[in-house]
Image (cartoon, rainbow, N blue to C red; front, top):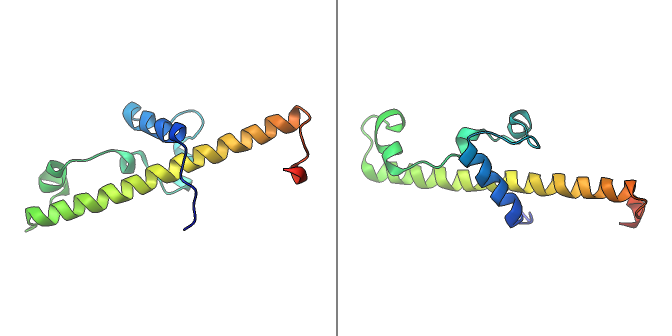
Length: 110
């Protein structure tokens, strides 16, 4: 895709959101939804989550539950990276605004 990897700082912010169980003041739940991200998608799950109860599909084998868990983890990591890149974009935008306000180079010179 050619997308840049998110910064470690932004990945840490996403981890903090997951631990807190809520979005922070900079990226609201609505903003995350516009990116196709819900908090539930960022939360880690275990094999037990997929092989019992709510996530279990009728007649599903343990092996299939493992495959679904792996697929979920890939999607979760993709969404985590996407949100972290959004944090990087916001930080870059804020830095450019601050630089412009401080009389820095005009946008065309950047």
